[in-house]
Image 1 (cartoon, each protein chain N blue to C red):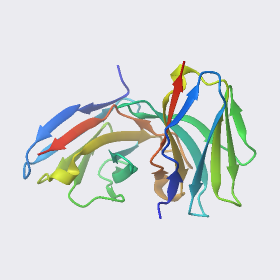
Image 2 (spheres, chains in turn red, yellow):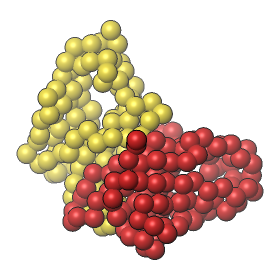
Image 3 (cartoon, rainbow over the protein chains, first blue to last red):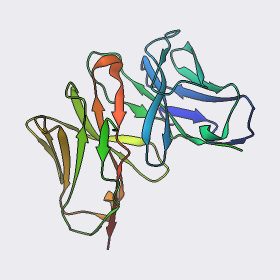
Image 4 (tube, each protein chain N blue to C red):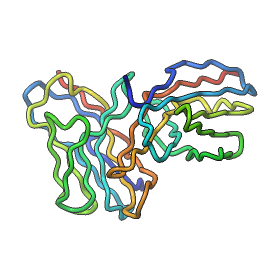
Length: 114
Length: 110
């Protein structure tokens, strides 16, 4: 089984709908991240969390919210989806220990907002 | 200006060729540097870290030039399986946040 899983893997929704993307991990990592990837722009950080109930804004948090109710789960919500939120979304985890640690990514969720 | 810049490519090379990618970064306080590999429609995975002294892992060699603020990745004896997008990644120290370049596409052809 994969260490970092994301659901759903693909989602098509309409403008104005609320949508939630889920991320679960079995790596036991404390730190979790949500990124979006757009062609030509690379991955951009939306939100990150260093522990349960810890939430920090990333580079592009507007229009998104997150919840970290358990160490293993980090969910991303779009309260009112808009077409420019169409993108590939990745969840990632890393260990708590000091300095940089490798980030492990989930398989991604392809979101299309019509 | 993007914080991390890469030539998007694609680099089209024959099997067995040597190919090199460069990446520049704008934040002189950047602490750590990495190359990630991303296959089409898949998640990024760490390929290797980049150290000031340079480091090698099999056919892959990474170099860091802090004075000129660029890092490089050299792939020798290219294989078909090396075809992927290579992401230059910089860690700026605060909060374990990574900054990703947009990636360089490599296509190795038989």
